[in-house]
Amino acid sequence: MKKFCLLILLFTLAVGMHAQNAAQARKILDKTAAVVGRKSGASANFTISGKYGNTSGTIAIKGNKFNARTSQAIVWYDGKTQWTYMKKNQEVNISTPTEAQQQSMNPYKFINIYKNGFNLGMKNVAGGWQIHLYAQNQKRTIKEMYITINKNYYPQTIKMRQSNGWTTIKVSNFKAKNISDATFRFNSKDFPNAEIIDLR
Image 1 (tube, rainbow, N blue to C red):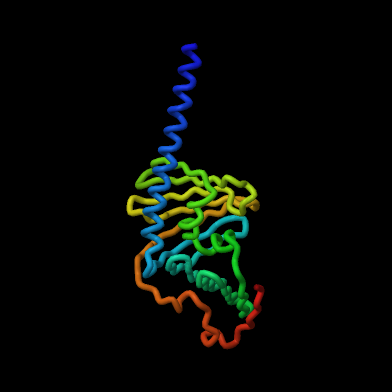
Image 2: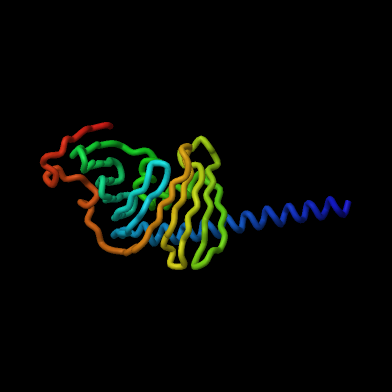
């Protein structure tokens, strides 16, 4: 009977510690989301590595909007529509991106997705925390994520698992700055020779 009581006590403590850990992870992500998702905007440099190769560039963000620039492409997203300009063939593809497509070009997409459908955990690491997100539904496009966040609540590394493997995004030079809404919309006048392909 004593062993049974001890097991119940240990199980209760473990569940309580897990809930406390998840609550702490959510608080850290809430603060990070407030820093990253500031209404007037922010910018950063990033590198992405994964199954489809490596790329690096800059990103401007403002809430759910983003503008990402690499040596191969420029992507504008105004919260609904995405324009992708491929420099090599001077094509602009217009689309309504999925969650995974947004995540692959916007390292800060996680500031919204952690709020629903993920189990959260965290551990302390040098200079900050590592937050673990695990999708409750493993049919979801993004199945698992690890986000390393520093003490200023700036995300530094985002590692996500999809069906095709892991992708790692490293972020540096994060700066809060005022950014115009026009930054997040494609302007055809700037690319007069581009062929526009509407994929919506």
